Amino acid sequence: MANTVMGVEKEFVLESARDSKSALRLHKAGWSGEARIVSVDQDRIDIELRGAAAAVAPWDPVAVYFDYHGTTLSFAAKARKVLEDRVSLEMPIHLVRAPKRRHVRVPAPRGFSASFILANERVKLDYPESGEYVDIAEPDGPAGFDVSSMPSLVASFRQRAQGISSENAIVMWKGRAPESLEERIVARLGKVLYIPSTSTGLPVSDPYPEGRIVTASEEEDFEGPSIFTEGSKLARLLMEKALAGINAEIWCPIRYYQYIVGCVRLVNSGERRIAFDLAAVDLAWEFSRILAFLLHRHDYFKTAATNPPSPRAASLVDLSPSGCLIAVSLASLQIRLQPGTLIDLELKAPGGPASLRGRVARRYDDGRSSYYGIAFEEVREEDAARLHRLLYGKAWDPADDRGESGAAPAAGAAP
Image (tube, rainbow, N blue to C red; front, side):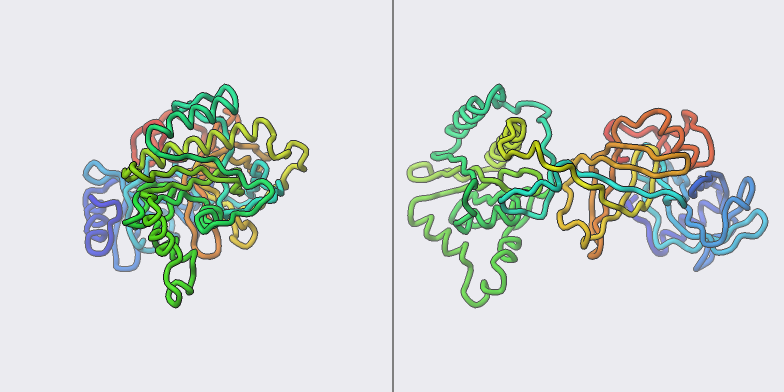
């Protein structure tokens, strides 16, 4: 079954759930209950609640889950009318396969609000800004590099780079702005300028889920309308490189929060007529990440005395004891948070605020706001229990950890 069910198939599934009297699991802010479908019309679904119908009021948004042939499906809808033990729901646009989250997320109840803090977001450095914000965190593992000191790290990088390239360089932009076209592209986009071969140009697509390399279309957007009247500057540059004996290049940004402070360069030239593969991209990327951490640890940018950042307001879209979805106006936050970014979140709720730490698990934009799915880390037991009661209207029990898909989620499941 596809992840989304629409049209005639959607109506067939709902009618089958009605005929089989499948149990529905309903959730709204502060209440959870069960129901079954009693009728399906073109524009609405009538359900019969098992319990007090007064728990649902007209225009309340609800999240509905039910099992269908071994798969848990879900949909979101608003209550149109409430009559005794029956509720009419608007017909959803589609049904979706329930994600493997640890807890059901519900629309944020009244009285809840959120704000967040980014580490060093207000640090002001004289370096280019890419518009993307990344964490400067200690690497999970050394990835084959010697991290005992800065000289050891650089030496281990050069040793590994010599095995796959004819030249390598580490360029820091301290005291100067990016100059060459390659440097300006890397500084503006915050991604790797990956030229596997000067005779083929840039990749058409990016194989990295998080977005790591500059694609041909992104480079064209960088050059702007002049590309149609004057031709591509990069295309001319690649031709010049090929004539000069350069066969392949990688320009990898060194990212420090929202700043691009330099780049790592790998070159194959002369007799080394070997195209760079993605393993070379990975080498430069991992080295630049570890280098940024060591620069931060040694306070290379002299940021230790900088004033702490101010909390930023966010709209709380939905929430569970293990995660939330927040919306941040693009006008209020010029930078976008990359997946994996760690944030400090303050959740104001009835009974007092909760200070939580979480990582960005996913993001998307709608043209006005950026939406971030946050996975909480190390939630205190008392905070989780309080959120559970406020969101679901009941105390936690082990069955509640079965997740939205109807079974306990696997390790690393989304919040």
